[in-house]
Image 1 (cartoon, one colour):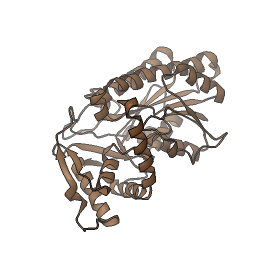
Image 2 (spheres, helix red, strand yellow):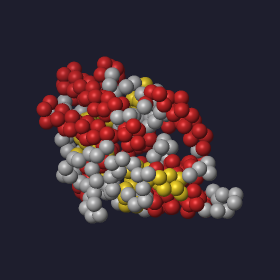
Image 3 (tube, helix red, strand yellow):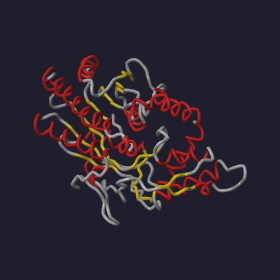
Image 4 (cartoon, one colour):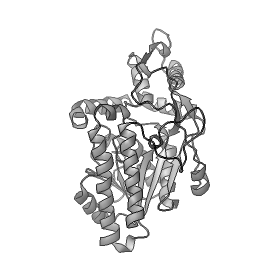
Length: 349
């Protein structure tokens, strides 16, 4: 297939591009290159005829449509999104513009292309929309999210993603566009921008800065390695039934404080401080985030059963070890992308 991958220069999108190329698909990466999307993530993949790059906004219906036609696209996989909860609290407008209106524009382009201009694609075309478990709200001490969990978003970010999920669903039921929605738990792994928990803690520790932990650190997340998530999305594209949604988790619930302490322990072993003190002495508790959901967890038994989904990283600590190794070996990448964030902050807030 020829896949049109939005947000393909970002953290999760670039992992999916690698998965797609390994499977022998042709990929057109479509990315606006905001502070979270980087050519450095995909420069080694670009090759005419195999992996192309177009800089563009998912809100630009005309550019998306012309790109579909130029490359004879068979499927859209939509990773493009504003995704950092803290940014959404301080500056929600861009989240609504990108995640809601951008998704709407992309759906319109896909509908025009696959149902009107190329009706022969009507049944084979796919539009896969990648979402989050945060649309389901918060869990108590027990239970897990699944495909049947009611939506109850609690932050501007999750509300914008919930809205986009509903729009995608509506385009299937109203217009017959073959859409599939995926929802995943917290991702981690190589090339994650240093604003999310794990890369932030790695970089702050190495820079001898405080390791800020919200509240008492007891908020729980289910962690999935980005390569496992990319594999799940590919299965949803290949085997998923239009109109369905599929949840992907890591079966790795950890509270935030335990995650930070595990990072410190691994760094103590692999990159010890000169003074021999543990990195966990840098942990600092800070005021909790507004609307901070207590616990997320995913039941992905439906995806396992229907798609054959399995995880390469069955143990969180193994995936975390590989992630830390990658960051230690790629400090030049960190310097480049964080420098870009400083240059473009005015565009995103």
